[in-house]
Image (tube, rainbow, N blue to C red; front, side, top):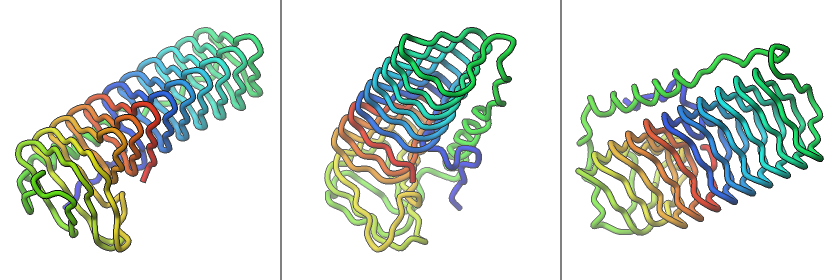
Length: 276
């Protein structure tokens, strides 16, 4: 039985630690962060964000969604922002920002020179209450899913080793003990109704490209990792990653799926993250 991510389902990232997206990166899908959120210069994010720590957008960034934050929020100069901001701390809107939405700060609100905020701007006691946070439920769902996989056994199915390159995986369960460092192409062949589970008892490192054949879906590929997980630079990766450690999608890589971690999540420069 595949464990459901529950409250974390439908999110591009559900991470117990901080979430960072590098300069020039693009991301679609909601984000829940047990730490802060940092988006690099000229990055693009589409999806609602909920962060316990501070949220900061680099200059010339684009964002479309609702941001709910329990710490300070900073929009970089010349950002383009569409959506509402709720913060229990100070909010700073940088110079020349173009924002179509409302800003609610429980403390103070500062708007830079030449910035254009079209919606309501409230701060202090006049501000609207910050919506309830779901962060705890989403992270708990990630932890429960990990615990369920581990308790049911991480050595189920067919052994998966890095010694076989350019491999084709048919639907089913696979495992690697202890770690998996895979280089080369990897093809998932099956229908839209088929599922794959790859359990890795150590760290996962993937350097190559994943291909889908026969109607196989990214959302039906589950990578369960009992340590850190990484897609190396310029890789193409498909699937839902469920990791005990930090997850990193390195520079120029493309990701189709979701990132769920009991630690931090990072997209490096010029990565493309597509929720699936």
